[in-house]
Length: 208
Image (tube, helix red, strand yellow):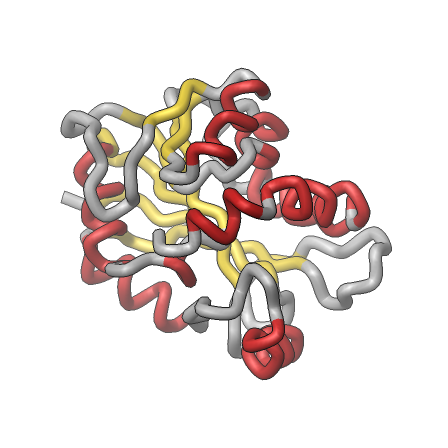
């Protein structure tokens, strides 16, 4: 992840967005929750300030930004200082891993996915949530990212691109959810599949 300085410097503003847009945060968390394993040991890669991990009951996280990791630790998350491309975690350690809107900041997406596969146990789940640039709102994000504080240097992906990367890394996509059809802070629908909601979630299983 190459945006740790930006996120660290503006961690308060990052958290404020989720507070100000609580209906959108609720929808995003619910879309993830619907595909998150109900049991097992999990970890979030790119934990940020720990908002999603704490909401979803994930007690372990990886985050290279010291300021953001400190906030996550204050929320009760056990933090590891590392980048997704080189995880200092043993093989076959976790039952599932979560990554939320981190793919667009990774230096090497495929290597990161391969690292996540390595730390998962056989049959483990990788849940990736991302901004789907092929959706109507995704195209707006892409068009205006140059003026965005957080997304200025982001490289957004389509659901097809994420699917191909998952397959190459040794995963099989199992199910998907999508939400956020408008950026107005109103309750949002959760739908199966991808292609309409800008916040897409894919659950993939490690294959042998």
